[in-house]
Length: 301
Image 1 (cartoon, rainbow, N blue to C red):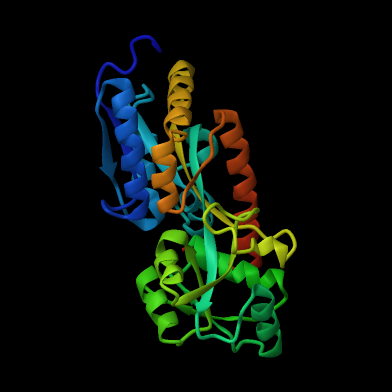
Image 2: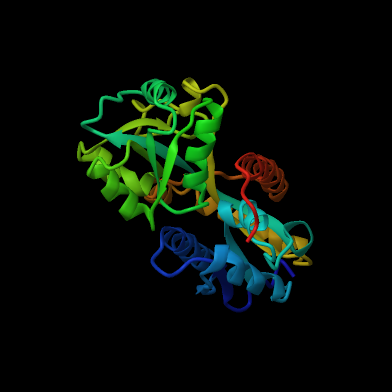
């Protein structure tokens, strides 16, 4: 089958609306794969409800290699914990194919703030329990829970202010209505580069290319790391030969220099590897976020 696949267009289900950052990333990869395969790879947007409509469509699809799913971190780590009926079981319904890349976050304050470092932020939060306001870009999102986890990791009590999205949270920080926010790089770098926000830390294990002067949070809060990420999954039963081919081809396209540069603009850093490595990484991440949800006392809705 690997010799004849693909003999027709491939569908890539994306559980986000067209134009959203994950959709942009998915389309970049889909275009490259389409060129490599000589077949169109068309994006099927299925947004809503923690990614459930998209994941439900993926698990119902034939396991013939012609339907793949673009799966972000929150959908497989948070949705099963925060929704009573997620309509998919990652362990039985889907198989890992390839990682696209990781998407670290950034912790920022207003440039006019007296808080100059992450250590300063921790010190301020300890000195004023419950008084240091944190803008959560979207309730129960990866950036929101990263901020909450930071509070727990540092033994501080921060006051979370929920907003409808990244733009609203950034506007609040620009107006000094909150002390800090945590969000993905694309939402914040324009303000950092314009001198409106001060970057205190990135949430990756190491400092990031292009942000070498911004410390990793773990340099101040030992062991702290929080990542978003994007991956490709397929319905269980998809031929191993197809999974292996898709994996090889994705590993190749995400390491092309021009795509590496474009992904970096979107705050995504390629993570080539095997399907087995992706599966192990995701299981580890699920444990991390399951503990975070439990620690924060969040209940499924």
